[in-house]
Length: 110
Image 1 (tube, helix red, strand yellow):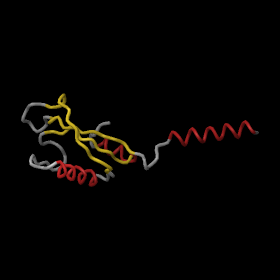
Image 2 (image 1 turned 180 degrees about the horizontal axis):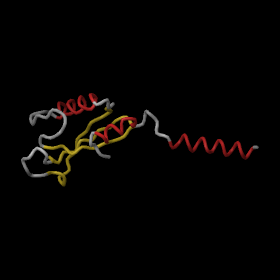
Image 3 (image 1 turned 30 degrees about the vertical axis):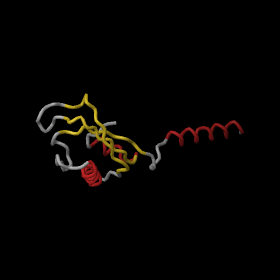
Image 4 (image 1 turned 90 degrees about the vertical axis):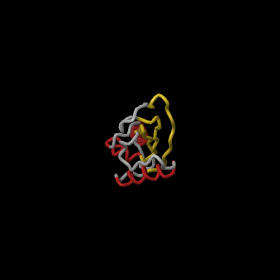
């Protein structure tokens, strides 16, 4: 009886610890393009204006955005003038874990 109780408790602890909670976050990335990103782009935008546009776009897709940051990766910079060419700027978006599937559907990557 005592052994069965211990097994049940251990099973419950293992099951609960492996579940993702709604308050956990996930980080996704997007390689910015010259003009083919799905949100409004203007080359004169400040960083804060660009963050606001990205946040507005994602919230319209029912994503709860927690944080947006930018970093530069020279290896991802393409020197061309087509809209699909990447600028080297990588957009990092922290969202609620429960929105991970939406982010993947929107072609963000982890």
